[in-house]
Amino acid sequence: MSREERTGRGAGAGPRPAATRTDRLLGGVERVGNRIPEPFVLFVGLFTVLAVVSTAMAAAGVTVQVPGSGETNPVRGFFTAEGVQWFTTTLVDNFVSFPPLGTVVVILLAVGLAQRSGLMSTLVKVVFAGAPRWLLPYAVSFIGVVGSVMADSVMLVIPPLAAMVFGAAGRHPVAGLLGAFAAAGAGYSTSIAVTSLDALFAGITSSVAETLPDAGTPVTPVSNWYYNIASSLLLTLVCGLLITRVLEPMLTRTGVPTEQREDAEGVGAVEDVDDLSVSGTERRALALAGLAALLTALALVVLAVVPGSPMRNASGGYLPESPLLDATVFFVVCVLTVPALVFGRRTGSLRRVEQVPAAMGEAVRDMAPFIVLAFVLGQFVALFTWTRVGTWMAVAGASGLESLNLTGFEAVIGFVLLATVLNLFITSGSSMWTIMGAVFVPLFALLGYEPAFTQAAFRAGDSATQILTPLNPYVVVVLAMLRRYEPRAGLGTLISRFLPFTVCFWIAWTALLTVWFVLDLPLGPGQYSRL
Image (cartoon, rainbow, N blue to C red; front, top):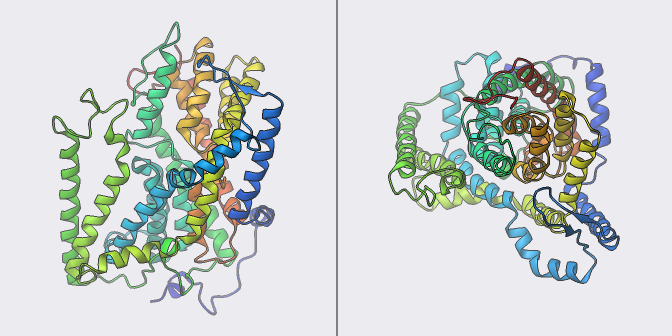
């Protein structure tokens, strides 16, 4: 049975349902948003504007001081002798050191191998063939929300797999693609498991809190654990409902194709799964691949926990910093690549050695547009950091909120709103928390709030707008995936479809924070909101 027959969207399926008021509103957002230039042109323009603004601020003698640092630094201008020297000598470094570039390339090598070996499609058939269709949005949402244990990899691995799952179940694959990305991006700061981000945030918070007269309860990676578990479950429910009630019906009403273009492959490709039958050879190969994945995972665990492990830090532990916390991409690549090789060898899809690099090459063949964009985006992000305009924006926003002299819980809401807005410009959570934590951990401590509570409030504002800003390079990646279905899709298309997720995630997360505060529930083991 074809996908059109299973979904009822083939020829002769009847008239398209009438657009709702929400459709018209989001359609307006899409039309306005699609007037934003193509990402490459957009960032060339933003780079030029930032270059002019930074030069004007430097000429005006604007300075910035991160509270607690004791050092005042001037904003640096691009059109100065120093700026010209910086740009002409760091052009290559700005591109090569752009963090998402390496992550995207390496992860897609492994994902491409897993796709082209047939492992992913077979896994989807076996796991989801008998699963109830109504459950899929919630399963995808849960995996996306808690997937931050994979760090940035979650935004590359989960969305195309979710599209495959939805397509195999006769649901709209674009709903799976966008819903999974929304869950992974907007819920990035939380997970039911303790992640490297928890350790990173805790280290930043502790470094600020230890300078306070009353540092409160020591902040550790588990200080927000209970709150994170509740957040993960709540956001899973919200995301699943939005996929089911808003996103998928809207895609159907507006006639978004359920099939990719015939030339769809590479970074934007999602493997179609129409035939849910699995051969005996595939089942045996999948069992061997599962065994290989288990043995690989056990080997990685042993590598991490044995005494004297190279994954430990100089003191023999893992926190606050260790190679283990920086090895997430390596672990993900291993767990994807080894089973794919075993599966491909057993089924014959990767019988010869030369087929392996060929499969990897196909996976990155269509990455040229992203690499070109990464070049200009890397220059913009580097200039944003070098000029100190980003730091100035964060400090100015924090100072403005502090000057309002709010002393109750409304100050916390204002703080969450500020983090939400700044997240549109500074997509690195650790960078933004370094700046904002230096201001608000001491400020809220004076108001009687634990540093761990301030950190929890920051999480609520840090991620919700992650999926709306083109400064997030993974938004550009998911746009490439979407264009396999809708060649005319633009940034406005993504913004209009992600906006309900951002708004509902923000409201749900802030409401949960309010309930936690009012009821004085423990944020983590021995950790409460008030000093």
